Amino acid sequence: MALEKKRDGTTIYLVHHGRTPWDLQDKVHGWSQMGLAPEGKDDAKKAAEFLATEGVGEVYSSDLKRAIETAEIIRGALKIEKPNTERVGLRPMDVGLLKGLTAEEAEEPMDDLKSRLWASAPGGESVGKFLGRWGMELHRTIQEALGEDHACAYVTHSHNLATIAYLLSTGVAPIRLHSPVGPGGIIGLHVSDGGGQVISDHLFDQNPVGVSGN
Image (cartoon, rainbow, N blue to C red; front, side):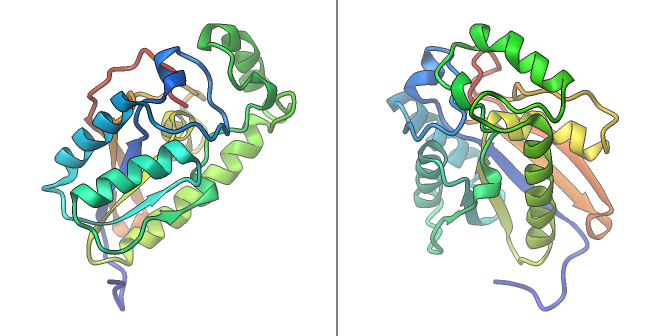
């Protein structure tokens, strides 16, 4: 239920989607519409077990299949009646023709794109465009969560979770594109002062980083 007056603080739960067949092969997803592998469904169930005591009353996800399936498993396990809300802003970077490459094959071109912020990936978008889109979505997420009387979970992707530190530091931290938590992992954003202060915290990591999982 939306509040008449926003809260001063809350915790937002950012969930890395569960594993897909490409995660198991360490391949880059980009905007692929690949769904979860059986292992990824287990990841989502374990994430739900962690969230079960956190007062989560609403779930959001990107509109990509692996995130939607993760969100629906969490929503079902937590018995949340409100439907999952899909958000384009929660998508990862569009890596274009780099989609489907192994993480090793994509490492050099992705490092080049990070060093040239407004150069677009072949057939995709630039790191700068992605950061702008994700930054606007993160702002909406924070303000939205402050207006609810329950905690909210947002299922997103490796690129989004990896750049949280950069966005929260207003560009002081380096740009990273590998998530600090693996598939099914959860990062908490502890929001206070009406959004004036946001601190990130690695809350749960069932698959420590080793796959790209974007």
